[in-house]
Image 1 (tube, rainbow, N blue to C red):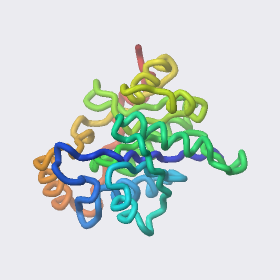
Image 2 (image 1 turned 90 degrees about the vertical axis):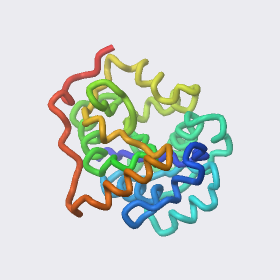
Image 3 (image 1 turned 30 degrees about the horizontal axis):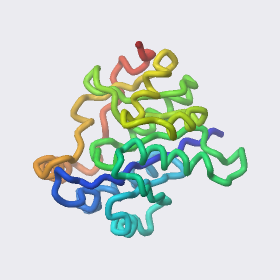
Image 4 (image 1 turned 90 degrees about the horizontal axis):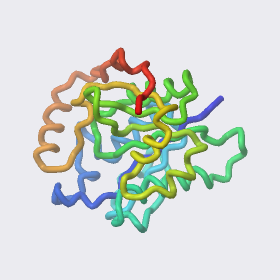
Length: 224
C-alpha cells in the first residue's frame, strides 16, 4: 500500500506577526501542534516538521505529538530551504523500500483553515490518478499548499530556488492535477489581525465543522 508523508514547514521568523506565530494558540492548541494533528488525522505518515527560528521552543511544543522534527539551519534564506530539508529527510529515511512513502504533501504550519479532509482529498486524488503533482487551487486561480509531490520529484525539490515548489509544479504542469477549494480556506497567519480573526472564527465553529467538499472543477487536469 502506498504511503503519503507530510512535510510541515514551521521554520519562519514571524516578522510581521511580531512574535512566534507557531506558538500562538488556536482553539486550545498551538498553531504548529494544530498542523501536526491535522496531518496525522488525515492519515499522513510519517509527519516531518521542519523547524528553524526558535526551533527549541517549537520542538518543545510538539512533545508527545506523532511527528519527528528536522532543524533547518538555512531557514533564513527562504522557505524553499525548509521544503528541501523536509523532503531530504524523507528521501534519506533508512526504511525498507516497502515502508517508504511514495509521495509527500507539503503543508505550511500557519494555514489553520486547512483540514484533515482537505489533505485526504489531495492524497486520494493522487491515488486515483497517479499524478506526480496534486496541487490545491483556491478561488479557481491561486495555487498554494497543501501540494503533493511524488517521490520521484524529491530530488528536484531539494534543488529548487526561492520560488519554492512553484517551479516544480510548473515543470510538471501537463501531468499535474488540481483540487479546488474556496479561497477563504487559503488564509494564513501573517499579522496580528490575521490571528485575531482566525481565533474568533475557529472558536465560534461547532466541533463537527469540516472543510467543504472539493469543488466540481477539482477533477480536471491542470493546464499550462
